[in-house]
Length: 516
Image 1: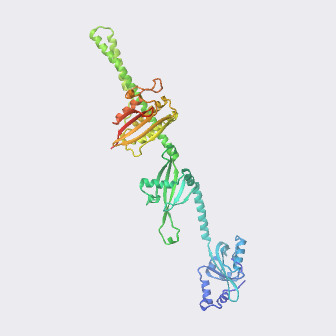
Image 2 (image 1 turned 90 degrees about the vertical axis):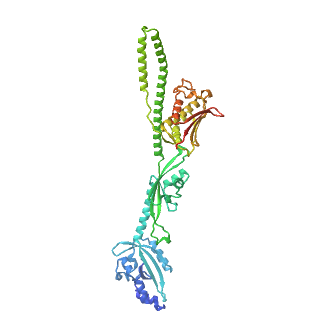
Image 3 (image 1 turned 120 degrees about the vertical axis):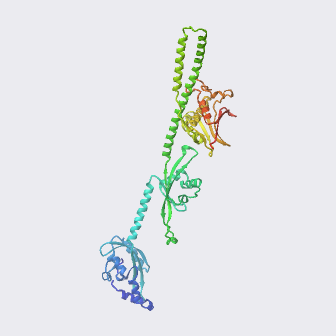
């Protein structure tokens, strides 16, 4: 408070009322001051209190008797800067109203923050008095500082969080975002919430995040960005949480209905997704490799049985003829025993042929299987410097198929194409894989710019153990396309082979009936 010399309210009120109408007489003036719902003090020009009201007494803790006649400095506390008092006195002595805050001390020694307004006024006889009102804003100040601290802590916690966070209002306008959200936006070159809104509109027909949440308190949505190249794909998990949010507009003062804002937490799941996808592809690669091994072993052993059975049949026929012409031939018994042993051996070999695991027909996404086939052959494609061009029809119908059998066939076609490209000694190997739908058929085309297949050999290449590549090449068994033909037959499909029109290479077209 400001410091002032003794006077009293009666003198002051009388001085004020001199020359005024009876409506503002001494009694009314005193009644207004004493019963004002705010702390009021009247001081003289030196800061001595002439009168105080009950609110002033309640705030300070002093009695009226202890206050009136004493200087306002009795309430002052040392933490209020001296410059504040200098400004205060300069202002009111200049005839202006001063408004500000002081740290004051109550009778019990406790401190409070006083929000003051001090207005000078003069009587007709020239005496100067000060009309002071004050409010205890200690609690408001505490709440304000707490809110400020909480806001700072809240912002720091959000900024330090290992996820990107954005807060949007009911119009999907961003009202807060942390540092990670800004980094994510810069790395994507687009606001992730814009992409999320587009996805919600495309998939669910909801034009905004707020409408997508509707009556739900929380939801989550996975956002995939950069779909054109798998290596650039980014998988984001968006967690949406609706929280009450009051409107701060003046016209909404009497509105008791709370609005809502939405907290959007974005977690980058790209690394986890890639790890899961890598494990899935590795699993597919192992299963395909095992299937290829079993199928190759089957073909080799069955081919071997076929090759052995022919000579044995001839020997058996010759033995039968000998028995008819010369029963006493001493070697016939030995030949019968040898034939019996040979047939037993062939039976044992036949029984040793491994069986494939049965696989049920199911709806199959051909595009996904082709993408998986490319993935499991990535290292081989890179090693052979073969560039792959995929042109897959996005709305391709499913077919009824056996996924792992089809994977095996596609894997053989891709491997065959790579071998053809390497055999042609191309430095810029090209592999084109496409899908299309025509009426009730799903068509897969695998095209390469390798050495090609002469027209007179196109039917032979599907025979077991027949190959257009040199027999000395490691891994060349002439079985790959045989497997493809068998898989095609299992799916009631057809297989067509042709040469490229304007350059070397081969086109394999597999035509499947679509799933009804």
